[in-house]
Image (cartoon, rainbow, N blue to C red; front, side, top):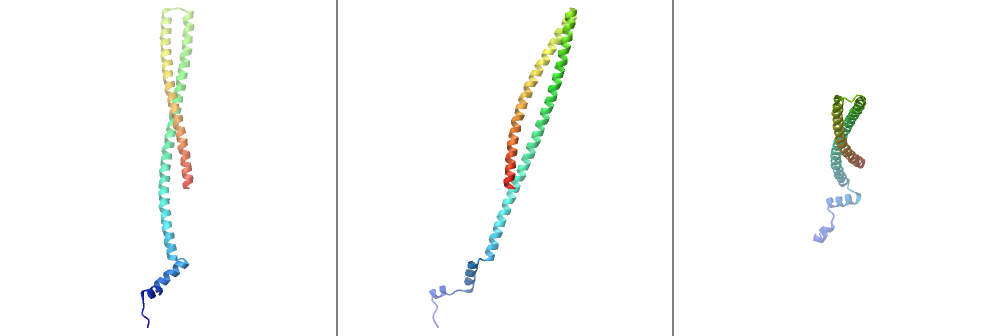
Length: 165
């Protein structure tokens, strides 16, 4: 019987060590399954994160869309108000012209006073119209800026969705 030395023990393959070496050479299915499982878990985590981002992006997109619709309704209401003012101005102009014709035909004091009152009313209406027109112009400019920003954000969202998709 030969004595077993440290070198001899290291040279002797143990059954488990031999099995591990064989699995390493052949590609251990357990290691492959474990690495696939780990990769699968990483992908699931990534998908959950991307789903969360997509959900948040969709919510933000919906908010922007609601805001855009609100701005559109505001612009439409302002346009209707402008049309109403223009109609009242036109009728005031026509009435003023008819009064001027009446004044020129009969120069009574009553008609002159009425004419001056109407002229003042007309001037006040014109000033109110100018103020509202300035307000509408400012609001329309702001809405256009908001619409451009919304379009940029929607395009960025579309690109993000395509990247995620």
